[in-house]
Image (cartoon, rainbow, N blue to C red):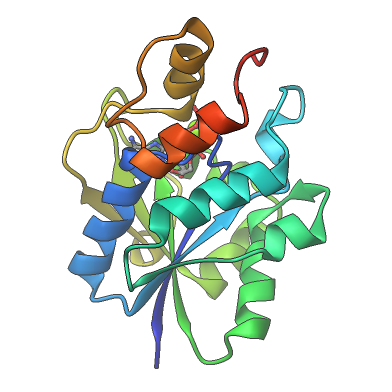
Length: 195
Ligand code: ATP
Ligand code: MG
C-alpha cells in the first residue's frame, strides 16, 4: 500500500518552509511520495487577491521537480472554484485507489480544521500530520487524537505573505524560495501590485 503524503496549499508562492515540512514528514512517516496540491480559490482567502492558479501550479512544479518523491496534482486547479480539503481528498482517493493518505498541514491550519467542510469525514479519509512552525503554538484540542500527529520541523520563519511583501518592495527573496521560483517571479513580474 502506497503511503501518500498530501501537502495542500495556496503556494503563492511555494517556499522552503513548505518543502522542508514535506521532506521532514516524508522521512518520519516513511512516505513513498508527497503530492503537492495547489488550491483553486482558497476557502479562507476569498476576500484576497490570489495569483492565478496556473502560475502557482507551475511554481510548485519547478520547486519540486528535483525531488523524486515529490509530485504535483492538478485536481484542485482543474475542479476550479473554492477549494475544500474534503474534495481534494475525495479526488485523490479516486485517482490513487488503495493509497493511505497523510494530510500535511501547518499548525495555523490544523487549529481551524473543525470548521472545515465535512470535518468528521476528513479524519476518516486521512491521517493528519500537523507541522509546527515558528510563531504558532499548537492546540489540537477537540481533534481526534488517534488521527492527528504533531511533527516539529526545523524552524523556518518563512511565509508566502512575507515573500510577496518582499517581492513587492524590491527586497531579495533568494534562498527563501527555490532559485527557479525566484526567476519565475521575476520573469512574470508577480506580486508587483498584490496585497
Ligand atoms: P500565506 O502567508 O499566503 O498564508 P503560507 O506561507 O501560509 O502562505 P500556504 O500556501 O498558505 O503558505 O500554506 C500551505 C500549508 O503549508 C499550510 O498547511 C501551512 O500551514 C503550511 N506552512 C506554511 N508555511 C510553513 C512553514 N514555514 N513551515 C511549515 N509549514 C508551513
Ligand atoms: Mg497560510
